Length: 125
Image (tube, rainbow, N blue to C red; front, side, top):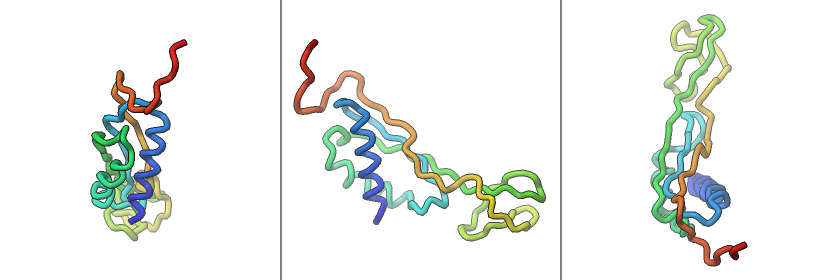
C-alpha cells in the first residue's frame, strides 16, 4: 500500500511547516488517474498520523478530481469515466490530451493558532 508512504510524506511536509503548532486538518486533492486509491488513503490515515504527535487529532479532507480530456474535434474538455479510455465521450475522437485527474497534491494545512506541540520552546528574545 503506497498510500501509507504518501501520507507519511504529506504529514512530514505539514509538520515541517507547522512550526510546532498542532495540526487540525490537512487537505489533499486526489485525481482519478493519480494511481492513488481514495479508500486506501482513508484507511491509512490513522496509521500514518499515529507517528506524529502534532497530527494525532487532525482531520483529513480529500477533494476528488475527475479525469478530463481535451477533444480537438469538439474544442472543449470532457470528463471521462473509464480509466483506460482516452477518447472523447461525446464524439469518440481519440485524444491523449489529459487535462486533469493525475493530481496528488497537499492543498492546505490548518493549524491551531496558539498551540505548541514541540518538546522545547524557543527562548524569549
